Length: 180
Image 1 (tube, helix red, strand yellow):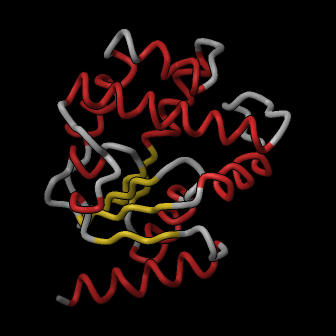
Image 2: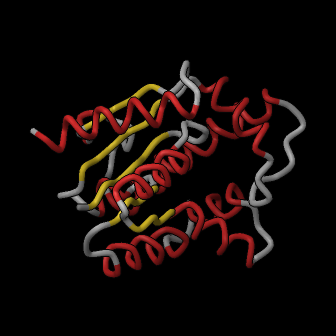
C-alpha cells in the first residue's frame, strides 16, 4: 500500500504522513525534506531553491524521478507531486487557511526556511511558494492545478483542528476508504 499526502505549506503534511506510517508500519518518505537537504547543501532556503527550479528543472525532476523509481510499495510519501508520481496510491490532500498555515510555519522556525519576522511575511511566502510550485509543475509536468480536490481520494481542511484531531480524523477517513 502506498499513501501519498499533498497539501499547502503549513497544512500538516509531514505530521500526518509520519503518524500514518507509524500506525500502519509503513516507511515514511518526505520529498520536501529531501529537497530542503539539497537546498541546504547549497546554502539555500527552500524558497531560493524553488526559484532556481522555475528556470531549471533539475531541482524537481531529479528528486521526483528518484522517488518514482525507488519506492515500490508499503510507504507513506509526503510530497506535492506524490499523488501524480504514484497514481495507484491512496491520495490525501490537506487544505488550510493561509493565515493559520502561516502561524504554524512561523512557530515551527525550520532551519531550512529563512527566519521570518512576522506572520504576514510567512503568508506572503506561502503564496509565493504555491505560485512557484504551480508554475514549475505546469512547466515540467503539464499539471494545471496540484490542489484540485478531484485528483485526490481524501481531502481534509486542517484549519480549525489541532494535530491530534487531524491525525484521528484522517485515520478514521482512511480506514473507511480502505474498507471500501
